[in-house]
Amino acid sequence: MESFLLLLSVILLAGVWSARVGNRIGFPVLIGFVAIGMLLGPGGIGISPKVPLSAAQSVGYIALILILFEGGLHTSVSRIRKVWLPALSLATFGVLISSAIMACLVHYLLHLPFFPSALLGVAVSSTDAASVFSILGGQPLRRRLVDVLEVESGTNDPMAFFLTIVLIQWSTHGMGSFWHASWYIVGTFALQMLVGLAVGLVAGYLGSLANQRIKLDTGGLYPTLTLAFAILSYAAAVLFHGSGFLSVYVASVVMGNRRLEHRYSILRFHEGLSWTMHIIMFVVLGLQMSPSRLFAIVLPGLGLAVGALFIARPAAVWLSTLGMGFHWREKQFMSWAGFRGAVPIVLVLTAILSPGYTPSTMLDAVFFVVIASTLVQGWTVKPLAHRLDLFERSPSEGLLELVAIARENAIVTPIEIQSNSDFIDRKMVEIEFPENTLCYAIIRDNHVIVPRGATRLQAYDHLLVLSDRRHIQHLRSLFHSELIGEPEFLP
Image (cartoon, rainbow, N blue to C red; front, side):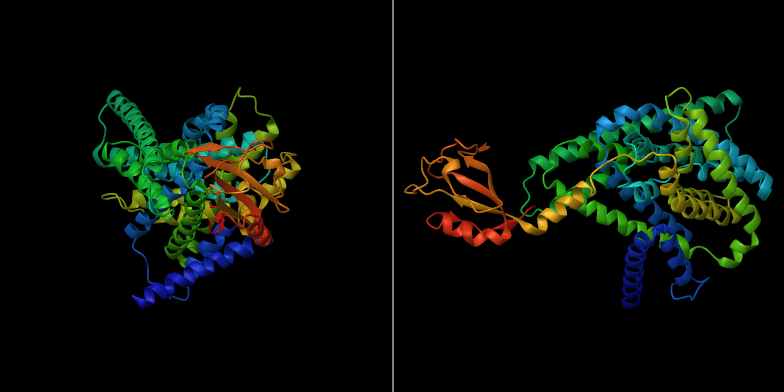
Protein backbone atom coordinates (compact mmCIF):
# COMPACT_ATOMS: atom_id res chain seq x y z
CA MET A 1 0.00 0.00 0.00
CA GLU A 2 2.80 2.39 0.93
CA SER A 3 4.58 1.69 -2.34
CA PHE A 4 1.41 2.42 -4.32
CA LEU A 5 0.84 5.72 -2.49
CA LEU A 6 4.48 6.69 -3.02
CA LEU A 7 4.20 5.94 -6.74
CA LEU A 8 0.93 7.87 -6.98
CA SER A 9 2.47 10.90 -5.29
CA VAL A 10 5.47 10.78 -7.64
CA ILE A 11 3.14 10.60 -10.66
CA LEU A 12 1.05 13.55 -9.48
CA LEU A 13 4.11 15.65 -8.63
CA ALA A 14 5.69 14.85 -11.99
CA GLY A 15 2.41 15.76 -13.71
CA VAL A 16 2.19 19.11 -11.92
CA TRP A 17 5.83 19.85 -12.70
CA SER A 18 5.41 18.96 -16.38
CA ALA A 19 2.30 21.16 -16.58
CA ARG A 20 4.24 24.07 -15.10
CA VAL A 21 7.25 23.61 -17.38
CA GLY A 22 5.08 22.92 -20.42
CA ASN A 23 3.09 26.12 -19.99
CA ARG A 24 6.25 28.19 -19.64
CA ILE A 25 7.96 26.83 -22.76
CA GLY A 26 4.79 26.34 -24.83
CA PHE A 27 5.01 22.54 -24.85
CA PRO A 28 1.72 20.58 -24.90
CA VAL A 29 1.51 19.35 -21.30
CA LEU A 30 -0.57 16.26 -22.13
CA ILE A 31 2.41 14.75 -23.94
CA GLY A 32 4.42 15.11 -20.76
CA PHE A 33 1.90 12.98 -18.87
CA VAL A 34 2.09 10.21 -21.48
CA ALA A 35 5.89 10.36 -21.44
CA ILE A 36 5.87 9.95 -17.65
CA GLY A 37 3.72 6.84 -18.00
CA MET A 38 5.98 5.34 -20.66
CA LEU A 39 9.05 6.10 -18.53
CA LEU A 40 7.62 4.51 -15.38
CA GLY A 41 5.99 1.53 -17.11
CA PRO A 42 7.32 -1.89 -18.09
CA GLY A 43 8.68 -0.46 -21.34
CA GLY A 44 10.74 2.12 -19.43
CA ILE A 45 12.54 1.85 -16.10
CA GLY A 46 9.83 -0.52 -14.84
CA ILE A 47 8.94 1.16 -11.54
CA SER A 48 5.21 0.76 -12.14
CA PRO A 49 3.60 -2.59 -12.92
CA LYS A 50 1.58 -2.95 -16.09
CA VAL A 51 -1.98 -1.69 -15.60
CA PRO A 52 -4.61 -4.13 -16.95
CA LEU A 53 -6.51 -2.92 -20.00
CA SER A 54 -9.81 -3.16 -18.13
CA ALA A 55 -8.46 -0.90 -15.37
CA ALA A 56 -7.15 1.58 -17.93
CA GLN A 57 -10.57 1.63 -19.59
CA SER A 58 -12.31 2.26 -16.26
CA VAL A 59 -9.93 5.11 -15.44
CA GLY A 60 -10.58 6.58 -18.87
CA TYR A 61 -14.35 6.45 -18.44
CA ILE A 62 -14.22 8.12 -15.02
CA ALA A 63 -11.83 10.77 -16.28
CA LEU A 64 -14.02 11.61 -19.28
CA ILE A 65 -17.06 11.97 -17.02
CA LEU A 66 -15.28 14.44 -14.75
CA ILE A 67 -13.61 16.37 -17.57
CA LEU A 68 -16.86 16.71 -19.55
CA PHE A 69 -18.66 17.86 -16.41
CA GLU A 70 -16.05 20.51 -15.67
CA GLY A 71 -16.17 21.79 -19.24
CA GLY A 72 -19.96 21.99 -19.24
CA LEU A 73 -19.98 24.07 -16.04
CA HIS A 74 -18.19 26.84 -17.96
CA THR A 75 -20.44 26.66 -21.04
CA SER A 76 -23.28 29.18 -21.15
CA VAL A 77 -26.57 28.39 -22.85
CA SER A 78 -26.37 31.67 -24.77
CA ARG A 79 -23.09 30.48 -26.33
CA ILE A 80 -24.64 27.13 -27.26
CA ARG A 81 -27.59 28.86 -28.93
CA LYS A 82 -25.22 30.78 -31.18
CA VAL A 83 -23.19 27.78 -32.35
CA TRP A 84 -25.45 24.76 -31.90
CA LEU A 85 -25.90 24.14 -35.64
CA PRO A 86 -22.21 23.99 -36.70
CA ALA A 87 -21.21 22.25 -33.45
CA LEU A 88 -23.93 19.60 -33.85
CA SER A 89 -23.06 19.13 -37.52
CA LEU A 90 -19.40 18.61 -36.68
CA ALA A 91 -20.32 16.26 -33.83
CA THR A 92 -22.46 14.04 -36.08
CA PHE A 93 -21.82 14.41 -39.81
CA GLY A 94 -18.24 15.46 -39.19
CA VAL A 95 -17.56 12.31 -37.17
CA LEU A 96 -19.17 10.14 -39.88
CA ILE A 97 -17.13 11.75 -42.68
CA SER A 98 -13.88 11.53 -40.77
CA SER A 99 -14.63 7.94 -39.71
CA ALA A 100 -15.20 6.81 -43.29
CA ILE A 101 -11.96 8.38 -44.51
CA MET A 102 -9.91 7.01 -41.62
CA ALA A 103 -11.41 3.54 -41.98
CA CYS A 104 -10.20 3.43 -45.60
CA LEU A 105 -6.73 4.60 -44.56
CA VAL A 106 -6.56 2.01 -41.76
CA HIS A 107 -7.54 -0.78 -44.15
CA TYR A 108 -4.93 0.34 -46.70
CA LEU A 109 -2.03 0.98 -44.28
CA LEU A 110 -2.55 -1.71 -41.63
CA HIS A 111 -4.33 -4.30 -43.82
CA LEU A 112 -6.98 -4.91 -41.18
CA PRO A 113 -10.42 -6.39 -41.95
CA PHE A 114 -13.55 -4.24 -42.24
CA PHE A 115 -14.65 -4.14 -38.60
CA PRO A 116 -11.25 -3.36 -37.03
CA SER A 117 -10.67 -0.72 -39.71
CA ALA A 118 -14.07 0.86 -39.09
CA LEU A 119 -13.61 0.79 -35.31
CA LEU A 120 -10.21 2.41 -35.50
CA GLY A 121 -11.54 4.97 -37.98
CA VAL A 122 -14.34 5.91 -35.58
CA ALA A 123 -11.98 6.05 -32.62
CA VAL A 124 -9.63 8.63 -34.14
CA SER A 125 -12.46 10.80 -35.51
CA SER A 126 -13.71 12.19 -32.20
CA THR A 127 -12.08 15.32 -30.86
CA ASP A 128 -11.22 15.18 -27.19
CA ALA A 129 -12.82 17.56 -24.69
CA ALA A 130 -9.88 17.22 -22.31
CA SER A 131 -7.39 18.34 -24.97
CA VAL A 132 -9.61 21.12 -26.34
CA PHE A 133 -10.35 22.61 -22.91
CA SER A 134 -6.68 22.30 -21.94
CA ILE A 135 -5.10 23.79 -25.06
CA LEU A 136 -7.72 26.41 -26.04
CA GLY A 137 -8.85 27.34 -22.54
CA GLY A 138 -8.10 30.99 -21.78
CA GLN A 139 -6.93 31.83 -25.30
CA PRO A 140 -8.27 35.17 -26.66
CA LEU A 141 -9.59 33.59 -29.85
CA ARG A 142 -12.74 34.71 -31.58
CA ARG A 143 -15.54 33.69 -29.28
CA ARG A 144 -17.49 31.87 -31.99
CA LEU A 145 -14.56 29.61 -32.85
CA VAL A 146 -13.88 28.65 -29.24
CA ASP A 147 -17.58 28.00 -28.64
CA VAL A 148 -17.92 25.76 -31.71
CA LEU A 149 -14.85 23.70 -30.84
CA GLU A 150 -15.72 23.32 -27.17
CA VAL A 151 -19.38 22.42 -27.75
CA GLU A 152 -18.34 20.02 -30.54
CA SER A 153 -15.79 18.30 -28.31
CA GLY A 154 -18.37 17.95 -25.55
CA THR A 155 -21.05 16.49 -27.82
CA ASN A 156 -19.19 14.32 -30.35
CA ASP A 157 -18.10 11.75 -27.75
CA PRO A 158 -21.65 10.29 -27.60
CA MET A 159 -21.65 9.90 -31.40
CA ALA A 160 -18.27 8.15 -31.41
CA PHE A 161 -19.22 5.83 -28.54
CA PHE A 162 -22.53 5.03 -30.25
CA LEU A 163 -20.80 4.07 -33.52
CA THR A 164 -18.27 1.98 -31.60
CA ILE A 165 -20.96 0.01 -29.77
CA VAL A 166 -22.97 -0.50 -32.98
CA LEU A 167 -19.91 -1.81 -34.82
CA ILE A 168 -19.02 -4.16 -31.96
CA GLN A 169 -22.56 -5.56 -31.85
CA TRP A 170 -22.65 -5.83 -35.62
CA SER A 171 -19.37 -7.77 -35.73
CA THR A 172 -20.41 -10.01 -32.82
CA HIS A 173 -24.10 -10.75 -33.47
CA GLY A 174 -24.82 -9.40 -36.95
CA MET A 175 -27.83 -7.25 -37.87
CA GLY A 176 -29.64 -9.18 -40.55
CA SER A 177 -30.91 -7.41 -43.67
CA PHE A 178 -30.01 -3.89 -44.73
CA TRP A 179 -33.37 -2.48 -43.67
CA HIS A 180 -33.25 -4.21 -40.32
CA ALA A 181 -29.75 -2.86 -39.71
CA SER A 182 -30.81 0.66 -40.78
CA TRP A 183 -33.81 0.71 -38.44
CA TYR A 184 -31.72 -0.70 -35.61
CA ILE A 185 -29.06 1.99 -36.02
CA VAL A 186 -31.55 4.86 -36.31
CA GLY A 187 -33.65 3.60 -33.40
CA THR A 188 -30.69 2.98 -31.13
CA PHE A 189 -29.20 6.37 -31.94
CA ALA A 190 -32.48 8.17 -31.23
CA LEU A 191 -32.93 6.24 -27.97
CA GLN A 192 -29.42 6.96 -26.71
CA MET A 193 -29.48 10.67 -27.57
CA LEU A 194 -33.02 11.35 -26.32
CA VAL A 195 -32.54 9.42 -23.08
CA GLY A 196 -29.14 11.04 -22.53
CA LEU A 197 -30.61 14.50 -23.15
CA ALA A 198 -33.63 13.89 -20.91
CA VAL A 199 -31.64 12.41 -18.02
CA GLY A 200 -29.08 15.20 -18.29
CA LEU A 201 -31.77 17.88 -18.11
CA VAL A 202 -33.45 16.24 -15.11
CA ALA A 203 -30.17 15.57 -13.29
CA GLY A 204 -28.94 19.12 -13.93
CA TYR A 205 -32.17 20.66 -12.66
CA LEU A 206 -32.30 18.42 -9.58
CA GLY A 207 -28.62 19.08 -8.90
CA SER A 208 -29.05 22.85 -9.00
CA LEU A 209 -32.23 22.57 -6.91
CA ALA A 210 -30.42 20.49 -4.28
CA ASN A 211 -27.57 23.00 -4.28
CA GLN A 212 -29.97 25.85 -3.57
CA ARG A 213 -32.34 24.15 -1.12
CA ILE A 214 -30.08 21.92 0.99
CA LYS A 215 -28.35 24.03 3.62
CA LEU A 216 -25.09 22.24 4.35
CA ASP A 217 -23.05 22.90 7.48
CA THR A 218 -19.83 23.48 5.56
CA GLY A 219 -19.16 24.98 2.15
CA GLY A 220 -16.76 22.16 1.37
CA LEU A 221 -19.67 19.76 0.87
CA TYR A 222 -21.20 21.69 -2.02
CA PRO A 223 -18.56 20.52 -4.54
CA THR A 224 -19.14 16.96 -3.30
CA LEU A 225 -22.84 17.42 -3.99
CA THR A 226 -22.19 18.44 -7.60
CA LEU A 227 -19.74 15.54 -8.01
CA ALA A 228 -22.46 13.14 -6.90
CA PHE A 229 -24.85 14.50 -9.53
CA ALA A 230 -22.14 14.27 -12.21
CA ILE A 231 -21.74 10.56 -11.54
CA LEU A 232 -25.49 10.09 -11.11
CA SER A 233 -26.26 11.67 -14.50
CA TYR A 234 -23.93 9.22 -16.27
CA ALA A 235 -25.07 6.12 -14.36
CA ALA A 236 -28.79 6.87 -14.70
CA ALA A 237 -28.54 7.51 -18.44
CA VAL A 238 -26.62 4.29 -19.08
CA LEU A 239 -29.08 2.37 -16.89
CA PHE A 240 -31.91 3.50 -19.17
CA HIS A 241 -29.89 2.71 -22.34
CA GLY A 242 -29.01 6.33 -23.01
CA SER A 243 -25.76 8.15 -23.73
CA GLY A 244 -24.05 8.68 -20.40
CA PHE A 245 -21.53 11.20 -21.73
CA LEU A 246 -24.23 13.35 -23.33
CA SER A 247 -26.13 13.23 -20.05
CA VAL A 248 -23.09 14.38 -18.07
CA TYR A 249 -22.42 17.29 -20.42
CA VAL A 250 -26.07 18.41 -20.48
CA ALA A 251 -26.38 18.14 -16.69
CA SER A 252 -23.28 20.28 -16.16
CA VAL A 253 -24.48 22.92 -18.63
CA VAL A 254 -27.85 23.10 -16.86
CA MET A 255 -26.22 23.41 -13.44
CA GLY A 256 -23.65 25.93 -14.63
CA ASN A 257 -26.35 28.21 -16.05
CA ARG A 258 -28.50 28.21 -12.89
CA ARG A 259 -27.80 29.83 -9.55
CA LEU A 260 -25.24 27.84 -7.58
CA GLU A 261 -24.40 28.34 -3.93
CA HIS A 262 -20.61 28.49 -3.44
CA ARG A 263 -20.12 28.68 -7.21
CA TYR A 264 -16.48 29.70 -6.95
CA SER A 265 -15.59 26.76 -4.69
CA ILE A 266 -17.47 24.36 -6.97
CA LEU A 267 -15.72 25.58 -10.13
CA ARG A 268 -12.31 25.48 -8.49
CA PHE A 269 -12.93 21.99 -7.11
CA HIS A 270 -13.93 20.56 -10.48
CA GLU A 271 -11.11 22.37 -12.25
CA GLY A 272 -8.58 20.78 -9.91
CA LEU A 273 -10.29 17.39 -10.18
CA SER A 274 -10.29 17.65 -13.96
CA TRP A 275 -6.56 18.35 -14.06
CA THR A 276 -5.88 15.50 -11.64
CA MET A 277 -7.79 13.15 -13.91
CA HIS A 278 -5.84 14.55 -16.88
CA ILE A 279 -2.62 13.53 -15.19
CA ILE A 280 -3.75 10.11 -14.01
CA MET A 281 -5.49 9.25 -17.27
CA PHE A 282 -2.62 10.10 -19.60
CA VAL A 283 -0.04 8.51 -17.33
CA VAL A 284 -2.08 5.30 -17.22
CA LEU A 285 -2.36 5.40 -21.00
CA GLY A 286 1.39 5.85 -21.24
CA LEU A 287 1.83 2.77 -19.07
CA GLN A 288 0.13 0.72 -21.81
CA MET A 289 2.67 1.71 -24.45
CA SER A 290 5.78 -0.24 -25.34
CA PRO A 291 8.48 1.53 -27.42
CA SER A 292 9.36 -1.74 -29.18
CA ARG A 293 5.75 -2.30 -30.29
CA LEU A 294 5.41 1.28 -31.45
CA PHE A 295 8.62 1.03 -33.49
CA ALA A 296 7.25 -2.03 -35.30
CA ILE A 297 4.41 -0.02 -36.91
CA VAL A 298 6.03 3.39 -37.05
CA LEU A 299 5.53 3.91 -40.80
CA PRO A 300 1.82 3.00 -41.03
CA GLY A 301 1.26 4.77 -37.71
CA LEU A 302 2.74 7.98 -39.04
CA GLY A 303 0.70 7.55 -42.22
CA LEU A 304 -2.49 7.37 -40.15
CA ALA A 305 -1.45 10.47 -38.19
CA VAL A 306 -0.85 12.43 -41.40
CA GLY A 307 -4.17 11.24 -42.82
CA ALA A 308 -6.05 12.24 -39.66
CA LEU A 309 -4.49 15.71 -39.48
CA PHE A 310 -4.36 16.68 -43.15
CA ILE A 311 -7.17 14.72 -44.83
CA ALA A 312 -9.92 13.41 -42.53
CA ARG A 313 -10.37 16.36 -40.16
CA PRO A 314 -10.22 19.08 -42.87
CA ALA A 315 -12.70 17.16 -45.04
CA ALA A 316 -15.06 16.75 -42.07
CA VAL A 317 -14.90 20.46 -41.20
CA TRP A 318 -15.30 21.83 -44.72
CA LEU A 319 -18.14 19.48 -45.66
CA SER A 320 -20.12 19.61 -42.41
CA THR A 321 -20.04 23.43 -42.17
CA LEU A 322 -21.07 24.22 -45.75
CA GLY A 323 -23.33 27.26 -45.95
CA MET A 324 -22.90 28.22 -42.28
CA GLY A 325 -21.08 31.50 -42.84
CA PHE A 326 -17.57 30.52 -41.82
CA HIS A 327 -14.64 32.27 -43.50
CA TRP A 328 -12.01 30.03 -45.05
CA ARG A 329 -9.55 31.12 -42.35
CA GLU A 330 -11.95 30.00 -39.63
CA LYS A 331 -12.46 26.64 -41.34
CA GLN A 332 -8.73 26.20 -41.67
CA PHE A 333 -8.29 26.87 -37.97
CA MET A 334 -11.12 24.51 -36.96
CA SER A 335 -9.54 21.84 -39.15
CA TRP A 336 -6.26 22.19 -37.29
CA ALA A 337 -7.79 22.56 -33.80
CA GLY A 338 -9.55 19.19 -33.76
CA PHE A 339 -7.35 17.75 -31.03
CA ARG A 340 -7.37 14.05 -30.26
CA GLY A 341 -6.72 12.87 -26.75
CA ALA A 342 -7.85 10.11 -24.45
CA VAL A 343 -11.19 9.44 -26.16
CA PRO A 344 -9.69 7.51 -29.11
CA ILE A 345 -7.69 5.27 -26.80
CA VAL A 346 -10.68 4.64 -24.51
CA LEU A 347 -12.74 3.73 -27.60
CA VAL A 348 -10.08 1.32 -28.82
CA LEU A 349 -9.85 -0.24 -25.35
CA THR A 350 -13.62 -0.74 -25.48
CA ALA A 351 -13.23 -2.54 -28.80
CA ILE A 352 -10.27 -4.65 -27.70
CA LEU A 353 -12.05 -5.74 -24.51
CA SER A 354 -15.19 -6.78 -26.39
CA PRO A 355 -15.82 -10.56 -26.68
CA GLY A 356 -13.69 -12.31 -29.28
CA TYR A 357 -12.14 -9.13 -30.63
CA THR A 358 -8.46 -8.39 -29.92
CA PRO A 359 -6.42 -6.89 -32.77
CA SER A 360 -3.60 -5.58 -30.59
CA THR A 361 -2.14 -3.27 -33.26
CA MET A 362 -5.19 -1.00 -32.90
CA LEU A 363 -3.99 0.44 -29.59
CA ASP A 364 -0.50 1.11 -30.94
CA ALA A 365 -1.84 2.66 -34.14
CA VAL A 366 -4.24 5.02 -32.37
CA PHE A 367 -1.38 6.12 -30.13
CA PHE A 368 0.43 7.62 -33.14
CA VAL A 369 -2.64 9.68 -34.06
CA VAL A 370 -3.09 10.95 -30.50
CA ILE A 371 0.57 11.86 -30.05
CA ALA A 372 0.79 13.56 -33.44
CA SER A 373 -2.39 15.52 -32.80
CA THR A 374 -1.41 16.67 -29.33
CA LEU A 375 2.22 17.36 -30.19
CA VAL A 376 2.00 18.87 -33.68
CA GLN A 377 -1.35 20.61 -33.41
CA GLY A 378 -0.90 21.60 -29.78
CA TRP A 379 2.45 23.22 -30.54
CA THR A 380 1.33 25.06 -33.67
CA VAL A 381 -2.31 26.03 -33.06
CA LYS A 382 -1.50 29.34 -31.37
CA PRO A 383 0.96 30.52 -34.05
CA LEU A 384 -1.62 29.48 -36.66
CA ALA A 385 -4.30 31.59 -34.95
CA HIS A 386 -1.92 34.56 -35.01
CA ARG A 387 -1.10 33.97 -38.66
CA LEU A 388 -4.80 33.79 -39.57
CA ASP A 389 -5.55 36.88 -37.43
CA LEU A 390 -8.16 35.10 -35.31
CA PHE A 391 -7.30 36.60 -31.93
CA GLU A 392 -9.44 39.33 -30.43
CA ARG A 393 -8.93 41.71 -27.55
CA SER A 394 -9.87 40.35 -24.14
CA PRO A 395 -8.93 40.85 -20.48
CA SER A 396 -5.40 39.75 -19.67
CA GLU A 397 -6.64 37.30 -17.03
CA GLY A 398 -9.56 34.90 -16.90
CA LEU A 399 -12.39 35.55 -14.48
CA LEU A 400 -11.32 32.88 -12.01
CA GLU A 401 -7.73 34.19 -11.99
CA LEU A 402 -8.95 37.72 -11.27
CA VAL A 403 -11.17 36.44 -8.47
CA ALA A 404 -8.22 34.51 -7.05
CA ILE A 405 -6.16 37.71 -6.89
CA ALA A 406 -9.02 39.51 -5.15
CA ARG A 407 -9.40 36.68 -2.63
CA GLU A 408 -5.79 37.04 -1.54
CA ASN A 409 -6.22 40.67 -0.50
CA ALA A 410 -9.92 41.39 0.08
CA ILE A 411 -11.87 40.57 3.23
CA VAL A 412 -15.52 40.83 4.23
CA THR A 413 -16.31 42.06 7.73
CA PRO A 414 -19.82 41.71 9.26
CA ILE A 415 -20.89 44.62 11.48
CA GLU A 416 -24.13 44.85 13.50
CA ILE A 417 -25.47 48.31 14.42
CA GLN A 418 -26.56 48.41 18.08
CA SER A 419 -29.78 49.94 19.44
CA ASN A 420 -27.89 52.82 21.11
CA SER A 421 -25.42 53.38 18.28
CA ASP A 422 -24.35 56.82 17.12
CA PHE A 423 -24.67 55.55 13.54
CA ILE A 424 -28.47 55.21 13.71
CA ASP A 425 -30.20 57.48 11.20
CA ARG A 426 -26.87 58.51 9.67
CA LYS A 427 -26.51 58.46 5.89
CA MET A 428 -23.93 56.17 4.34
CA VAL A 429 -22.26 59.13 2.67
CA GLU A 430 -21.62 60.65 6.11
CA ILE A 431 -19.57 57.68 7.31
CA GLU A 432 -15.84 58.09 6.76
CA PHE A 433 -14.89 54.58 5.66
CA PRO A 434 -11.18 53.73 5.33
CA GLU A 435 -9.51 53.82 1.92
CA ASN A 436 -10.45 50.96 -0.44
CA THR A 437 -13.46 50.05 1.70
CA LEU A 438 -17.08 49.64 0.65
CA CYS A 439 -20.29 48.59 2.38
CA TYR A 440 -21.78 46.54 -0.42
CA ALA A 441 -24.86 45.18 1.37
CA ILE A 442 -27.11 45.78 4.38
CA ILE A 443 -29.17 42.90 5.76
CA ARG A 444 -32.34 44.32 7.34
CA ASP A 445 -35.21 42.09 8.50
CA ASN A 446 -33.90 39.24 6.33
CA HIS A 447 -33.94 41.48 3.25
CA VAL A 448 -30.91 42.62 1.27
CA ILE A 449 -30.48 46.36 0.71
CA VAL A 450 -27.89 47.67 -1.72
CA PRO A 451 -26.78 50.85 0.06
CA ARG A 452 -26.56 54.22 -1.65
CA GLY A 453 -25.17 57.46 -0.34
CA ALA A 454 -28.58 58.56 0.99
CA THR A 455 -29.36 55.22 2.70
CA ARG A 456 -29.85 55.72 6.46
CA LEU A 457 -28.80 53.09 8.97
CA GLN A 458 -31.22 51.57 11.47
CA ALA A 459 -30.77 49.62 14.67
CA TYR A 460 -29.78 45.98 14.20
CA ASP A 461 -28.73 46.51 10.59
CA HIS A 462 -26.09 43.99 9.53
CA LEU A 463 -23.44 45.59 7.31
CA LEU A 464 -21.24 43.55 4.99
CA VAL A 465 -18.12 45.63 4.49
CA LEU A 466 -15.62 44.78 1.76
CA SER A 467 -12.12 46.08 2.43
CA ASP A 468 -8.46 45.61 1.81
CA ARG A 469 -7.15 43.53 4.70
CA ARG A 470 -4.52 46.17 5.45
CA HIS A 471 -7.28 48.52 6.64
CA ILE A 472 -8.99 46.18 9.11
CA GLN A 473 -7.67 48.03 12.16
CA HIS A 474 -8.95 51.37 10.85
CA LEU A 475 -12.35 49.74 10.28
CA ARG A 476 -12.39 48.35 13.84
CA SER A 477 -11.60 51.79 15.23
CA LEU A 478 -14.41 53.39 13.24
CA PHE A 479 -17.01 50.89 14.47
CA HIS A 480 -15.51 50.27 17.93
CA SER A 481 -18.88 50.54 19.68
CA GLU A 482 -20.64 48.06 17.36
CA LEU A 483 -20.59 44.27 17.19
CA ILE A 484 -17.89 43.34 14.68
CA GLY A 485 -17.55 39.79 13.46
CA GLU A 486 -14.37 38.05 12.35
CA PRO A 487 -13.18 39.21 8.92
CA GLU A 488 -13.21 36.47 6.28
CA PHE A 489 -11.72 36.17 2.83
CA LEU A 490 -14.01 36.16 -0.17
CA PRO A 491 -15.78 32.79 -0.57
